[in-house]
Image (cartoon, helix red, strand yellow):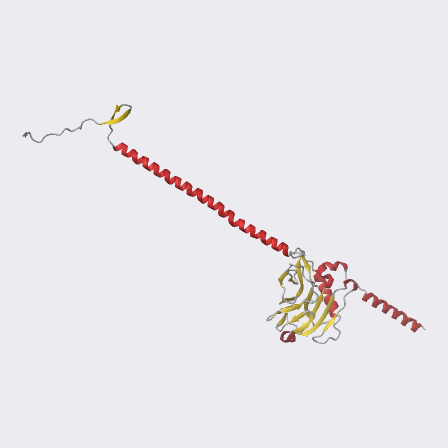
Length: 312
């Protein structure tokens, strides 16, 4: 009887412990740190790797207060990753030629899908998310029970790693969707969105598709476009006609001033010539004939002299 009672007590305690572990909550202050979240997601993803097969992804579980976040882990050989790549790991397509530093014999790729927690852990002022933030981080696979492991540095050497987003909201009319990349140091980079809602990268990190929040939500109607075209055309005509008219008026004024200056110069020159002639001419006396004064010339200054006295 005592044995049965003891077993019942142990069973009850085991059940209670299981309930407590299953309902473990994420520390409330960790919601402000994306890097701390990465460490916890690594721990929870590694818990899913119980006797794992190489190249097979295993989905992990997160606490109930982080419902919406999906994680997965895949264990690989370093040489296999470099020579074969991974054709499809969730939304990620890893090409041949990906290498890690420092070198490890086995590594684990941890996948994140932050879902509705994307804005919480990766706020991006001025932009709106069109897709959840997806993450791909690499860790050493030597000890699957290790926690808080540092990330390996993986890079694609030949072709880029592709992220094929499947859950994408349509972009507002007139807005340009673009890829966004968050590295492990906290910097943010933007890149063009490839056809089919595909982003590319050469290294690990977190990725998503965003659009500017202040982008126009509606396109102008046909009437507005037509009216705007006429208005722009009228403005263009005014910009051409007004400067032409003003320039023509200024040109006429300048030509008028130039002609007047030439005329005045000629008059001054003519007056100076007449004054010079007057100064060089002999002054004549004047006499009055009626009411008119006329020049008067006296006899010649030098009287003629007969060269000889011969008289006929």
